[in-house]
Length: 155
Image 1 (spheres, one colour):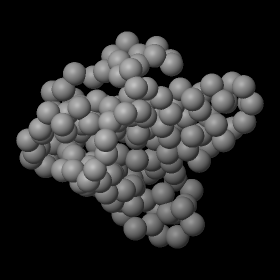
Image 2: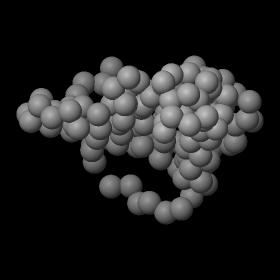
Image 3: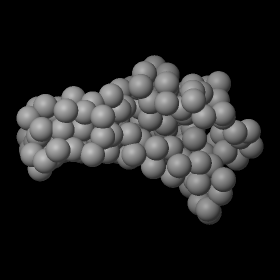
Image 4: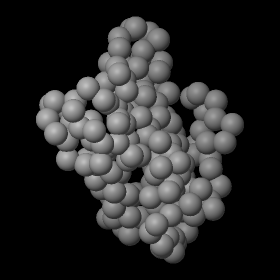
């Protein structure tokens, strides 16, 4: 298993997640029926009506629009990654896929909506990491992914 310590890539990932979170605040869903706090209509009846990378589907799940995320990230100069940073991103991509695969399997086994929702969230996470891999022109270990199989033997 890969050792984890607070490194630059983790701080960078936290920054990206914060950016996504801020963008989500600007998508205007107005979750409590209030005026919203961003660029969207914010009347509580128009889920995901704003222009951020995150939107809320009618079933309450969150969707990440990769093209909007890429566009937002393109407005920020990319930093230089070390080989450890690149390895950590590749690991994170597969780790999120592992979580996705587990929740899909649990959903099939138990037929509970909660597992489908969590699997969708894990797909959102792995999609965001894929965007970072693409941004830094790194090989994606998930290309051709088959559920339950991973490039990293630890997974």
